[in-house]
Image 1 (cartoon, rainbow, N blue to C red):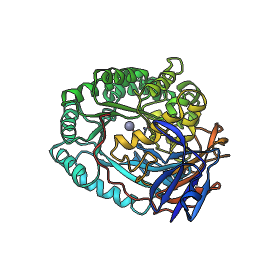
Image 2 (tube, rainbow, N blue to C red; image 1 turned 30 degrees about the horizontal axis):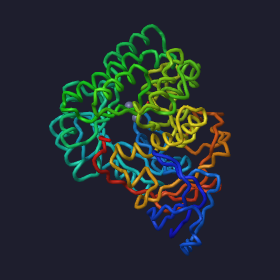
Image 3 (spheres, helix red, strand yellow; image 1 turned 90 degrees about the horizontal axis):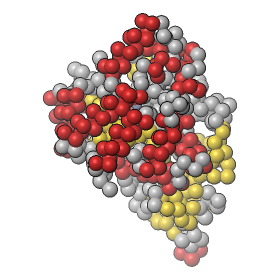
Image 4 (tube, protein in one colour; image 1 turned 180 degrees about the horizontal axis):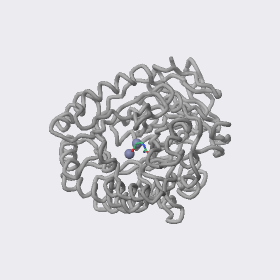
Length: 472
Ligand code: URP
Ligand code: ZN
Ligand code: ZN
């Protein structure tokens, strides 16, 4: 570490693009300088990175990942070590993962256990949300401690998965009241889990066991209904700030848009898989090939133009954030557990490495601007989860998390191309996208350059988060 000068590049911020040289001193961004002012100022940095023809963007902030997440008889296949190295390869310098609590467990025990799993294991910075799967007096009382003492300012609740993480409406209301009072953000997995369980049981009884029935038994109406219910509960809870995770259905987007139009503090994220993949082309593939695309909320049908609506939502800010919901499983011994029974397939798609690449393709396709790319992948996630301006924007004083992006190059995603996640397949196999992560700097240390990972597991630090910035 020392002083690094990134020269001759174009800095992209949410509010515009401009030519500037970025001076890094130790772990922080020291200054943005007029291009070429090194000689004038008599600067003698330890290292100069030439960014001619390149974009200089903030390190990516992925606020929804699941490293080594237990799921049924198995566990997501990236550890904190392998997953954060893959994140670095993708230009992601901060992840927010989850600590977990279920019925009968103590929140602080779950948090302590998660800290023990991640400490010293991350290649980039990390933080936690707290999943609360057992809303009771004890867990509700813990939320204050999370916010005031643990640097955790967001909780996650589930309207899906009865029998494990599911909360009923009364529990959700109580948790939102407590979180809202403290200024914390309630994240919601919004699907009507009770109705979905009926549809799943009926499908299995009929012999409809292929992976596509995972999607067909989680119809978009049940995502829209749950999203509306979450919005109304947040309103009744005193306009508690609400964040809908992994939004995939146009029906849910409509509910978010309506709430925002009313002025409610409701935000939503979507993920690249919901923009680029579909029920017909991917989830409908037979056997384990289709199982690879099982995630919840599910991939949606092209015919109902969910994907088109999501791009529109990203443009007009009804979708504020793009995360990955990175939850990888291998085909062998994991996804294949359910190739003839979709209910046994572990839910999740891996993608922490490819979010910036896949979303830059949205820039190339004319769906979003360069500024919006940075805003949805870096700045707004940092703001909404209490990490801005330390993370998410290139400004003096911020952590020196910087990506040099080469727009003239391209990236081939997949096992035969770029792939560093601990998975034996890629959901984006064979995708060729414009642009390339060229250099990645995490808190002043170069961690990726010249197609090499040069960082180290253990460099990543836990980020204590402040309250979310929900008002603009
Ligand atoms: O399929 C998914 N999304 N798996 C991860 C768990 C969740 O619900 O976010
Ligand atoms: Zn979820
Ligand atoms: Zn998730």
